[in-house]
Length: 132
Image 1: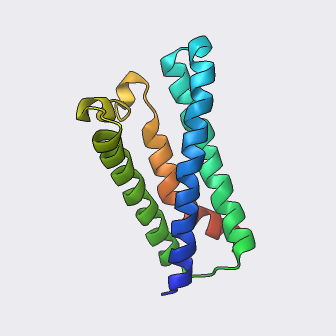
Image 2: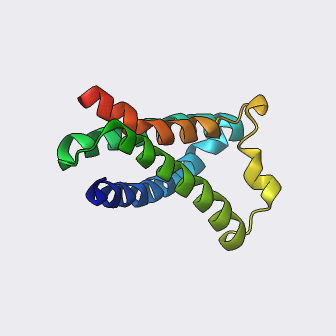
């Protein structure tokens, strides 16, 4: 397995962290007008789109290659890193309660954060498949 693919994939995930911060900042600007739930939904859809677009561009122009299962592993790595970062940073650094952090996972209340996680997990495989 190519360690180059995983190294670059880790760098892309770090980029996602910065893009998430920008996305959250922008959400804070339109949330007072749209309402908290709608702002969360808009932000989740925008960030899901950004994740896939960045993944696609990365795979198209980086020159890294791999077999399909490696791109599944990259998606799972991104998923693990995202959930770990969200809960560990969110709780221990920002100070959010566990209940607050779990709130965005309640699909029945219109919270669609799971969409971001699904897109994060499947984007490497899907983008590679489209480009193959």
